[in-house]
Length: 321
Image (cartoon, rainbow, N blue to C red):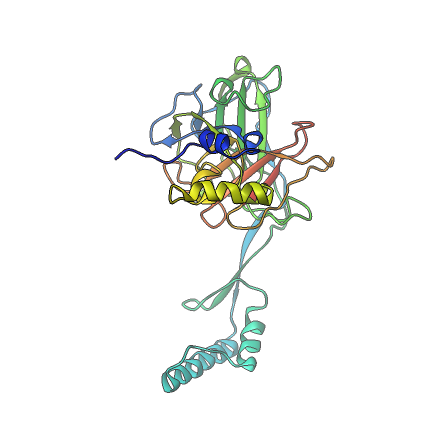
């Protein structure tokens, strides 16, 4: 069956004022294959400038903390469960807690996020004490020719994205973020040699990518509806409806592992990402969950990496959707 859906270019041509929002982007399309050492890839063999130390993360890592539930509190919890189930059985209604029961369970949980009813212990994540460095792992190796639209420094033809394979606490200051730390390294291929990075002393399995080759595709990307003025958003939705489509689902924010283009705001409203220098940051990379790399970020969603347009050396911005 032939796909008759309009392209983003056709949409921009049909809706006056939308063309300036078109941004070039590269979709990586990762697939299961052993990547070549010097090719663009996800994960895979490490390259690093000879004589330079491998980067480590010293940010605030989060650790698992388990606390046993005292026998008296276990008895209270079990009594509440029986009472709730009995009320639901006799009334044919839902399982509802009284205010007193809810208060008791809140006291027992004491801020924990999960209660294991088999081993009777609570689980929470807390800042690791004492904090210690963790070796970063290669996430993405990119050749300049595969994503020419990125803001490449004049002396760089390789971008290496490394991340710490752990969740972190308060990486973004006042901006809430609970995920892996990310570093960008703009380098020259001529300076890179095979390297053997240290094994991280601790890691989350879902942050250790399966090595994958990629098929870069150049596309033109349009923004999430929240990035558009109301009149342009309405015009774009009206155009999409002619094809039984929705703009924000079918014609904006190309999905998958993406370089450049626009970020999606499908889990939250638009939350602009600003650099510490005051500049509005721009989208550099989307890390997608699932597929051949077998990574999972957020709630099996997307991790967006932003850079400062004034200075690439400024710390990156991070957002989970």
